[in-house]
Length: 370
Image 1 (cartoon, rainbow, N blue to C red):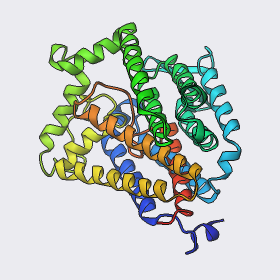
Image 2: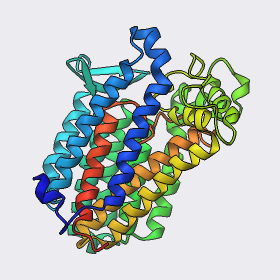
Image 3: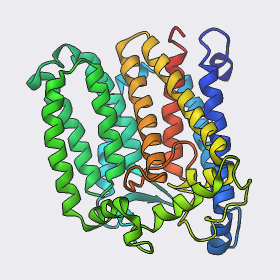
Image 4: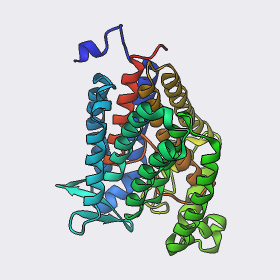
């Protein structure tokens, strides 16, 4: 399989592959740098998070190679099954005794010493299904009843299940990516305008229905109003980025990881990158993500069929939106969402799923005229 995969004819996009491998390597290094203090304190092993991240990376790279080798058109045939399995997992996570609660959200299913996050795998299942649906029904997408509303019904059903956990960040990423796919398929702008108005009302309702979401909004507007409570994370994040300056404090020299910034190896790993490697290091990482976006969009535009185009666009949209949301939270542009930074943040389900998506994108690149 590997011999066929890397032969000169139908080779994957090596630039994109190199970017992905660089991000994985940077992620492993930064997970160690940001977590060894916490790991020593909680588990008496400074390499605890690094070892697990390397394990997840290994599993993810194997998944990447697997998905990169399978023709992307195969997933069109099994799109219904993929979506059904993801729906079942989303329902199972809501059942007490099966679903595990962390950080106020019942979003995980325990599997031995590890756990999986079904909402992450729904990203893959829904993107594949929606790409197949849009390919077969694109001629109806300009019709509100025959094309647009059926897509919205599916997307917001998934969003509703994710919100029962609740996980607004993941739900928002998924909805935004699906809207981009539907728009690219030719949906009318006026239909989006109506849905946007309804969506803003619904979002306001979701925020008002949960006190912790209101707290996140007020903390975002004025974190100094409650510096030891709801505003603590964003203040500590800014304290990390600010001293980084142009060149940073140096690898391993972060101060905020000493129990100031909670679990810095997760959602706020970019803050530690900014503190240790400064503006130049942060810009380099952002540059890699920009390069990933550019190569991904080229693949989407040059894919040989509509299914490949929609699928590649959906993958690029998910990764790009997630990067933008995570970094925006870290630098204080939007409220805390709980969205991880692709390839870099610590986590099994997120990293593995991200590499599965990257593998499919690389497979599409083997057929695209780049």
